[in-house]
Length: 139
Image 1 (cartoon, helix red, strand yellow):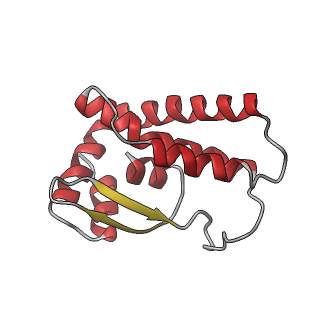
Image 2 (spheres, rainbow, N blue to C red):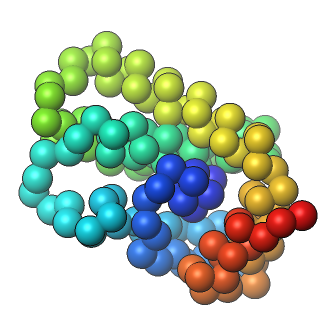
């Protein structure tokens, strides 16, 4: 879910590693120029990262009926909330997290064919470029 949602939200993908079952760990450049360290984040960046953070759990629920992972994604997202340019209170953070989960669900469920091709690419340990080509391939 992370790779597909991040890519479709416009986040450049730096790398990924897939284990033998095809479950990837994806690393993004959070901005197009890759400059992320130590600066405040714009709302648009937080929106995209909310979708990506929630997409792993959403994909697990869609594939397996339950989500076992995701706590580390929520911890990382919480850290990103503290770096926003404009203060985000607890209610806005909860709303953004819910919105991220809802948006991730919509992206994954409306792109099942792309998701399936991407999972096959992960299982074959394809490169980032080949994974993107799998997403972009027409049916």
